[in-house]
Length: 361
Image 1 (cartoon, rainbow, N blue to C red):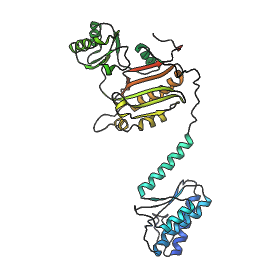
Image 2: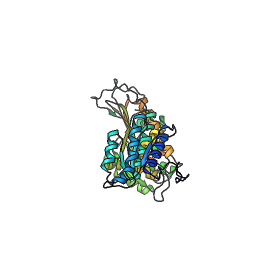
Image 3: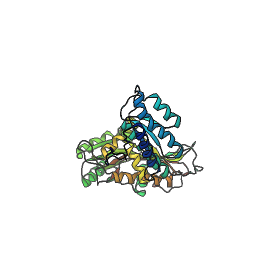
Image 4: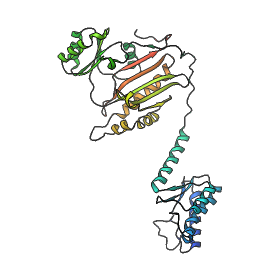
């Protein structure tokens, strides 16, 4: 180290003269590229366009050293400036010839470093997606929509929790069950694919009077029976489903649920197997949800652990049933406040016409 170099900053290229600066710069960079504990080597120095020959002798020197090192190391090398001004073309010429990037701005440079490390981690953990047999699925055959009871049985069999609920055939039975579990409740007409679109769902019924009014409003739908379900108000609505694709086999779909599924179309796709780590990346990609997961503007945080568990379960279910149950959708899957888990509020399932699964109907 030169005499004027402080011990607190040993890797700054100090020097009283151009020669000393050049020697120190070269030595520092050589040590950094040889150290097995260092993954990326860079030079941080401002080399703005319009600088004179004297300044270029200092800014161009480490650029030349980086170019020389390029031949002897596989480590990523780059040159960056703290300021967002155009680089001196003489410096760029040296770097371009050696294939070394020049980055404007410290923040951009650090972001590039982070991206490189993330990409390295991705390559190391990259999984070979399994090849799914789809020989048993006839994609020209129109799948059949399963009965609501079958959908709920699939929920139960695969470990997806749902609120207290009961199929009822009369208004009196609906009131009796509602008073047993406590208001508010939801009333849903059964046997309809998209109930809310035709007035087949009434939410937040607070008492028997409101339940009667809701029941009477649905009589024109000619539903064979109705579902009374406990109203779950807390949390955030998501969609979690899978669909058997003609090329990829089972594909997991996750995103904003309820009315926002079609309105915002903020969803992410993934191919099984689904690990907890992969599930978390799926959740993180839904920006609005991720902000709410950790508690947004005073709202309590959501139960991330339960949500990840549900996504993993959907992946497992898809791998197990994709040839028989060609589509399975929970919408909404309500992610409740931390510690309360998730709740499957509505389910829609379709099977191939020749399915051999033993279902309720």
